[in-house]
Length: 257
Ligand SMILES: NC(=O)c1ccc[n+]([C@@H]2O[C@H](COP(=O)([O-])OP(=O)(O)OC[C@H]3O[C@@H](n4cnc5c(N)ncnc54)[C@H](OP(=O)(O)O)[C@@H]3O)[C@@H](O)[C@H]2O)c1
Image (tube, rainbow, N blue to C red; front, side, top):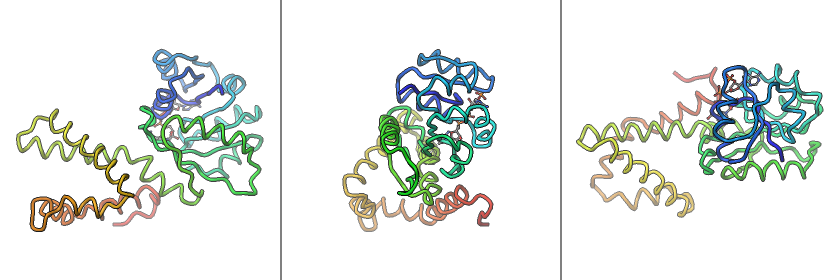
């Protein structure tokens, strides 16, 4: 399946690295498409139209507000379209691409190393979906990590934890590293300790069937140091901070406070 990426920014580059195969790609004039091709092979194509003519699957990697402009250039090719555009549900894609099979997916940046989560908006049973094509598209994205299918109405909250999640994890790591540096660890050593603890803990939580309480209890002796640390985090309202964060992502106009 020849992949054509419209847009060659952060997400396009992360996916192309994850796929590790030459792609066709475009940009809006910055030279990012050439940069992507220089790194990974493939071809910078001079127009979105030519890209759509030559690709088997067009992957929209531009910003959501360019949807109609790009669609106008290529919609009459009728080529299948996979979109990674934030906050752009399947019906909106179908409106922009009435003659195409459309698929709404939301990857996160760990796709770059084959450890991404790709959330796929489930199609209704009565939709006119080409199920064979859908399988091929999902197989392609499964090469980037794990594909999770959710109902369209839950795409917002699902992507508010997975799509933006790498930034949250990076912030959590950074805060812990900074705290440890203040106590005398080098940033390098602290970073190794924090990231290994994050990935090991994630694997342990998964192995225990996502029972986070069990994992916490196993580390927390009554009156001990972990209990004191957790208490400090609870008093700093860490749960409320994450609740605020998801509200801010899912419902930017209705933000609390
Ligand atoms: N970053 C993430 O973690 C993430 C996660 C999930 C989904 N997404 C989605 O991925 C999409 C891209 O995000 P990003 O972070 O990769 O943005 P980005 O780095 O700004 O990249 C956007 C790309 O689109 C190109 N572009 C703009 N207009 C175009 C046009 N008319 N024709 C062809 N290319 C055009 C830009 O070209 P120039 O290089 O010339 O400016 C740029 O290469 C967004 O819709 C976002 O919601 C991002």
